[in-house]
Length: 291
Image (cartoon, rainbow, N blue to C red; front, side):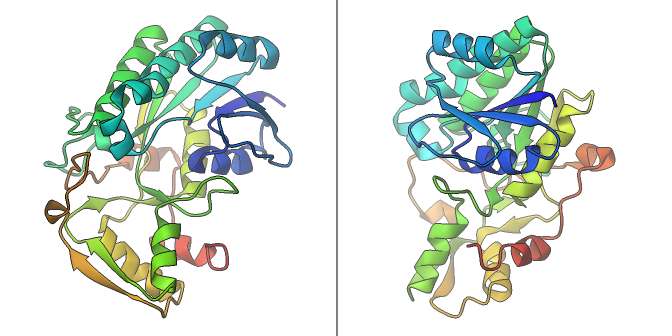
């Protein structure tokens, strides 16, 4: 079997990728500060900010393809610590693309829907980027630098993701569920819209992208929904009887990083290639007993 190297294997998306990719690849993965084991995968600690460590990793593994899922993905952290987050979100990504170019192997970069300002949704691959946060800016910069270093880089812009994240990570779903199950009230935005998918579906989309000739794909879901609307479905499907949700507006909540109002992705190009996210209700049903 060919070797697939997945960076950020202890993170939410990386962990899901490791589960799904084993069906068709010999999976190698990296982790940073959160040591984990995944049956069937070869995992190793690597500081991706260290170019020499990256080069040694490539020399040892000799991968046939790379999916770069490692990132500092919390917008508020990137806004507060831009220099530190830049090292992993941009510099390490650029180095990784260069190494893949030298090895003449495909490299997928997991970007984000937050490269858009949220004013003209839904966003297709042909729409101009216009980020409003440092995190979005860093992802745009990484897209540019990775393509410059290696024109064969495949950029996949990911939506909001939810589901099981393994032993070291979780999605936004788990802490909000915990709040409800403890009997507390949960305030949720009614004016921020995304096109969410489960981590498993996102992983399937990334593996599909490895088989295509497209160099830029959006991997959003088929339903545009607010956080409040999403949790209306969560409460029903997962039968959450404790606590309650109340509507609030994004513009009334002060956060370190600005948030765009609607970054719904138009993923029709990926749909025509075989990417087929299930309805949110079906995705949530599959998570019963896991979250």
